[in-house]
Length: 288
Ligand SMILES: [Mg+2]
Image (cartoon, helix red, strand yellow):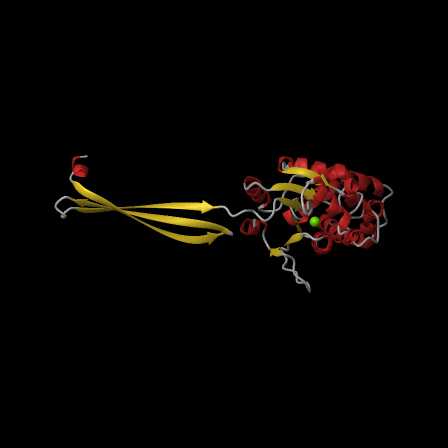
């Protein structure tokens, strides 16, 4: 303290640098304090850094997430379920020699059927009634009489699986903390999707879950997006759709007038561009 009393004056200079990180403006302040003594011979300097982050007004307020293959790891959860079914129903005794071949064949056929569903060519009930029939047919094995039982067991096993895609939980926590309001928009069944959301421990993130049943329409039909916007009590400009399905999520939402984030881990190319194209879910942090 005695030293301070000898100071003739204190000179403070302030410098600031601005830079932008993740679309947010940051200001870094550098203060330089010069202590000058009465005889002008004593000189000291102290520098302190402060970083202030100024949040720009958020363009979007509502995030509409697809569930399967966007947040919930459908392939991993489906593979685990099929693995259990293979053993529980002793499918080896029905002529299914390879568990992996059974899983791979199911995933290929199921993906094709859901694509047909998205294009409006088949109904949900067709998928449920036929997918295991088609798997056995594709494997060249007579279909077991209990193929409907296999389908039921699959539906009662799958939604209880909890695996999320890499980075999903961290990203949801980030956007929630940033103040976004989150909703699910999915073509799945209400009860099954609710179970998946609960099993994977992400229910608390979402205000609304809009399904083809609650909206009485499925993606890419504009009506399901209209229902989502209405339930969020929002305007179109405040909402953005995030999903992995080019036709259902991206073209559907864009045709309705929403901005889009295409979760595109394989780097697929199309003739037109979504609003944003990401390979990893964590890239959403650079957008939102
Ligand atoms: Mg999807």
